[in-house]
Image 1 (cartoon, helix red, strand yellow):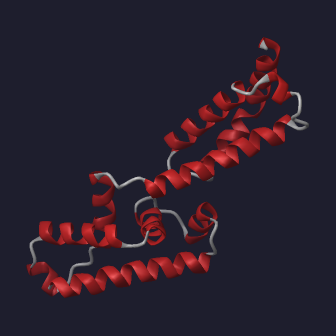
Image 2 (cartoon, rainbow, N blue to C red):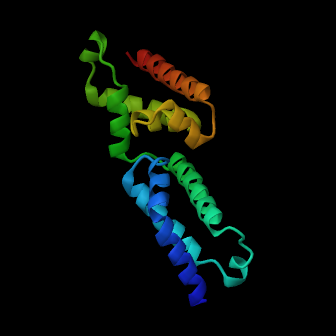
Length: 171
């Protein structure tokens, strides 16, 4: 068993820079990429020797594990409720003051916008968050969510329109 772990460790050491680069291109934050790289290594070490014997291309397997972790990470991020700091970042970027808005209490406006964002569909909310909080491009979001860039644009337009319309209803 130690011998098999040694082979996985050697492969990981050889490919760790490439794997880190791969992760950095697919997640929003460096710390997430580092965590995912470590998780790849842990999953490699958990492979039973009998299962490892059936793996024809260890390098391909390594990157398959990495790709699956990126997908799991994206799903978890979509399902997680926003923390107050993260939601505040999104709200700050979406608030576009006008003369009427200048008269509104900013804290009330922020709370209303938080409620509106929370009511959006999960995909629409996730796209807005990835674009405004994480600064991701339409193409990056499309790749992360396995949708077209046109769908990303539609979700952003739909989400912003819903927020603007509902905020106008509050005024």
